[in-house]
Length: 329
Image (tube, rainbow, N blue to C red; front, side, top):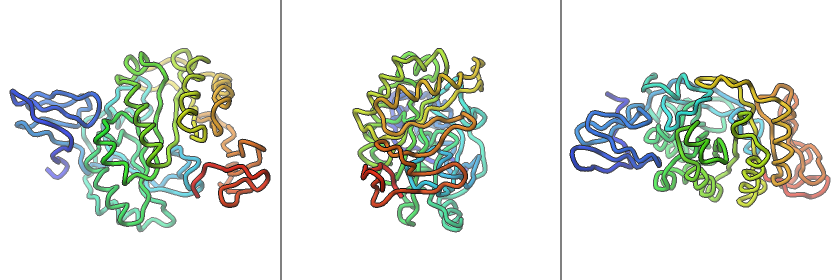
């Protein structure tokens, strides 16, 4: 089967079991069984990825949709996804593919590169829709070939990876949007089926290797308290106050039927985060201001009202006050 490939980052244990070392779950998988992600299977003491080369979704997207606001604003990127995730978020927005057994149309890394190169004004390839970590073998191969072809590689990820797998992939990644789903360990365990600290470590390591932005989906009453937003924003600022933060409004989805987060709460969280961070954006709110402003003089730097337009910027400095703007053009 073409879409089955021996996995990277695993070891053989006694009694025919294997341990997957791709992510911090460290699943110890008996023979003929699957890991928690349902994507990696132990077959006779060898671990296989079952979604290698399987595509469930592809599209040319605006880079802002990822969301990435400070990475080649206004550009378009060929976006692809498969199936599977190593989290089980109760509010999953893409549950129909993320929480699904291996499925999709088989393709090759070479074909993905060819499509990306033939798309007009295409920045590169974004691995999105499902969690790219559990698609690691294919993502790794495509990202390597993309680098050779002069294409940018972008990851939209929950950041739940072990250091060796992250270290192997980062040289081929140009930008990441990392979901920081909460600043609470209990939220990660009870709502997402994961742990917070490995995600924090991914953010710190990725910050030193590529462009990063962070997204946090705010669920009213669960992860949107003033104390939690302040702690999260302060922690991010200690890594880099210039890291863009996207605060996204929760809507009922998948296994969670709580009411949508009040819009007023999203803007309150934005005000709190802006005490520590220079670039804070609101998402999933109709009519929200998506522009990028100079953090010092508030001049518009990127106008996203209709068409995306970079203004008042020269050599990454605000034309009005000279403030350095953290943006890649």
